Amino acid sequence: MALVTEHERQQSYAAFRLGAALRWRVPVWTSTAVQRVAGRGRLAGVEVADVRTGAARFVPCDAVVFTADWIPDHELARMAGLAMDPGTRGPAVDTSLETSAAGVFAAGNLVHAAETADIAALSGRHAARHIAAALGSGPLGSRRPDPAQRPVIVEPPLRWISPNAITSAAAPPLGRFVLRSQEFRRLARLEARQDGRLLARSRPVRLVPGRPVHLGAAGLARVDPAGGPVRVVTGS
Picture 1 (cartoon, rainbow, N blue to C red):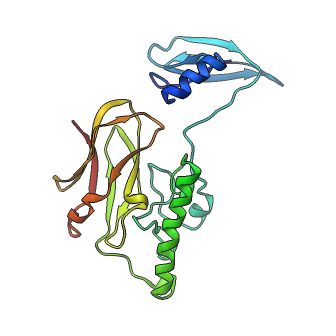
Picture 2: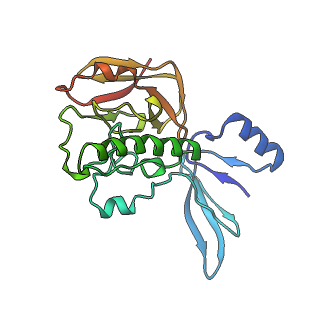
Picture 3: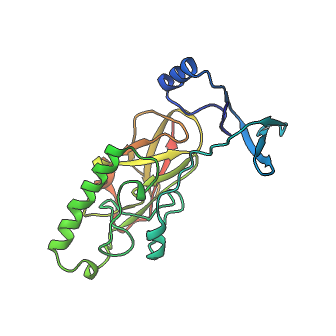
């Protein structure tokens, strides 16, 4: 038995990594990818390769389980024709969690995958408050788009951010944006900029693929409603 990851090192938290190593003694093969699954009628094994050198080897096994790189349960959102965010692969939402269709909101693991149950529930509460406000202002589909709404985009090594747009009507759930990185970085700072102007900067954070990092929404007050998109980058 072994765990395989294409990353240069595993993504688990240190306590979990140590506990698993002591309890189950399962090796973790880093910088390794599954290239081929072999067998006729039943599984015989897999071919794995070093992503740096290309060196391959065959590993006999009885089962293969694929995990991570989760995709939100977005089938209904796609069928409804909602705008999708290419990073999260869920429906694009603004800071009130409203989608591209007026009166249609999304929350939890529909917006982006791999969130814990408590955070997903709080996201639903955030959406519910804005749904109630929208219901109180008239028919849900009758409201016009917010002209002050500005998209929020990320640059590598960041992979995606949620929510994906800023509206003047609301702060994001829990007053922060959620981001994921596609690379390991130590002591990186997240910077939100609009037209080259610094809006906000985080404290130093550690970037690990698959783990969430957060950017506070305090800089929202400095967003120019007539300006360009807000870009989140990594600074020093």
